[in-house]
Every structure is written in C-alpha cells, then in structure tokens.
Length: 144
Image (tube, rainbow, N blue to C red):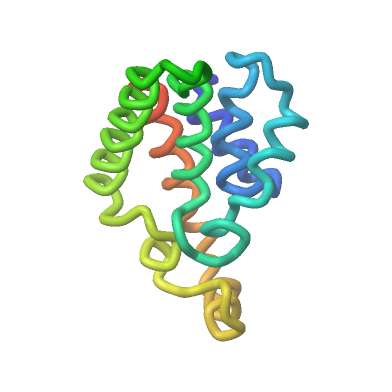
C-alpha cells in the first residue's frame, strides 16, 4: 500500500483530510498515529471548518515541516528549503486542482449553515476530498 492509499483509507474511516495526510507519514518521523491525529485534528475542513486552506494541504505542510523544518536558531538554509518545498507543493497541487482553498475546492463554505447543508446533500467531502488527500500525499511523496 502506498502512502497515498494509506491516507485515503484513513480519510474513508472518518479522519479529517489533515489527519489522513499527516498520519500516513508520521511513522517516518518518530510520531505515532495518535500524536499525528491530535496535532493535525484542528486543521480539517480548511482549518477547523473555516474553509480556508485545505486540510490535505495543511497536513502536507506538516509532513514537509517534519522533514525539512528549521530546528536550530542559526539554520536559515533549512527554513528557506522548507519554504521552497512548500511553494513547490502548492504549485503542483494548484496545477492539479486549481486552488488550495477549501471552499473553492468544494464549491461551498462548510462554515455556514447553507454551505454545510449543500455539502451534506451533495456529499462533497465523500466525492471530492479523497482526490485532494491522494494528490497531497502523492506530491509529498515526491518532495520528500
């Protein structure tokens, strides 16, 4: 099973998009799945159902931060590399999907009653989000 398959399977079990992407890679960085679920739990549905940055994207950012992130005060090259990887990720995700903004990807704002009603009626998270989770995990895999 690929990391992308693992992420999509996790999403199908009811975890958020951010949790699904981060947890697929967590073991590589000494983080167990429970820790991954906790740290990324607030980022689903565009960051706490605010429908801002897609949770699959923020989950991917966390994975890239774990791999490339600055950990020493003087390590500016690590910071620059991290930002470059994130920008490359965003370019590819946008090329595949047109946006990194949850409400634009889903065609509704789940932070409003109307948007939530539409999302449920149209099953947007079941029909659209698995692709975003897979895309995020595939792009991360290439960037690691």
